[in-house]
Image (cartoon, rainbow, N blue to C red; front, side):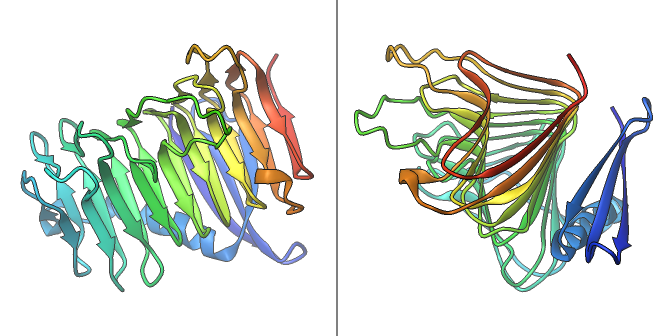
Length: 303
């Protein structure tokens, strides 16, 4: 399902307005975002225009690959980038340049080692853009992909966190997400792919914007969520695909949700999230859950 983005400045509201439109159906959802996030979206749209011959090819290897320089990168079809050290990331990005990374169909980043991580990407001084057409896999508690200080992920393949949930008697929330975001300015678009883990996407701090035309799936463990916004985080979710979770951990407790917006430990920190849904959101417990003073707006266009 193709989607186009238009970004315009709205002087009355003092922010950029991002309109996302499904080319086939003509339906439109309008999302308000900060200038920094709009710039990220523009960078994402520009990334596919980079000539493929200018990309640096990352070869198959079992040691961490560190992105360096401004040249775009690619993991080509048939290549596997992983590490033989479980707690290390396969690809690390932490530099002052704006760069983008393409994972081609048939390529793999990450491994099945316990506590492995595929990508640890920091956009504090640069802009991260990842376009996945292949498979990105891991089982790290900080996410298969960790986005720090912004960055964007477009997923047209598969991103998975294969960690197995173990019930915690102290009710500590789980963090084994497909994408785990810290410090705001992040954008995730899973247009035709699959994104899954104990939770699909976790926003730990700051601002984030998520669009889904494919599937975001949690494994249904107790306290697992398709998309989770924590501790005063804020942003938007536009769903035209499927966000689903099914309880299956055998603990005898069910507390899962397709979308969960909350603060931890009853902290008096207020977040704000808006959801525009024209797809399917499903859970065995609560489809959309709001706790502890967060602000929430849902526009449901189906059912």
